Image (tube, rainbow, N blue to C red):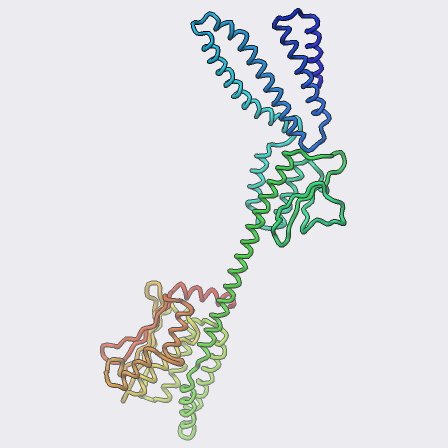
Length: 469
């Protein structure tokens, strides 16, 4: 404003006292009109308390810069350039070329200096930080935050820092604006399309009467990035909840399936055991008592394991010993049993009660039909990354071709009820294709049932049981 007064006064005084038409007289005439423009711009700039004051200041200074560059270019073109090209062979062409060069240089200089003018207005005149740097810092800050509360606190603190205002003047309001409360001077949506919309409310109090355009643009940008981050968090929470729900449903389905499979206990073993006890009571009461105690231990173990999906290999082998002791009492000298258990595998976990159907299968199809003595071998050892459990008998096996044996083989390999199909379903439910159950004929006589359980599955089962599952 003062500069405009000085230029206007100096131009008027020069027009009165300098003789025309000299160069200084022309310059004084230009100064009279340009000084008025400077005066008007200065007045607006000095009393600016409106929203676009920063833009007005930038544009005004750019206009002044453009006028100065145009004036300097004109003086250069019609002064030294005109004098230098007057005595050249092609004065008009040379002057035109130099005019284009001067114009291009003035444009490039205007663009470069215009950028510095913007920075001068934002940082020196209005005391603001670089908005681009503030946005970059804000994006890095919210990128590592994973809660709604921390994001709301971050946008509020960023807005307070950007506007240099008090915390009570900037609030993050959930839902629609409250018409009963004092209206906010500026309301910027953060999540406008959400079921729970959020707005950034700015209330101008005290001496602060307006917001600059760059400040409003900055608030809109940080609100936009905050809304995107909140949407990402909502989608991530929904995905986690969906995965958790699907996991719970899958676990419940597997547990229900396993309970249904474990509940299919063969009643023939109970009937045979009770009949044997009844027949031994008159003649051999001591064996009947021993068999009753063993039968009680078996059903106690079944009741205990009914709520547990896994047991240690050692517990399952002791359970099989008790079953086979009862069978030895029932068959007498006809049945002998051998256990070959790798001690390194005894602590690993296997599905509860999964070996009982294999032993019953060996008794029913290997020992019972055979005339004379029979032998059952129960073995378990570690092989590569698996546990291999085998149950062998020296009965007829699977190699004969008569109708009875074909039906027997179909029953053993396909298995219905609590048979081998039950075992295969449990293995498939727990381990997928990593576990297997195979039946093979022995070279001499009999059949071998081999169950393969992945070692990692046994370890996972062990950790699950340790956690109390």
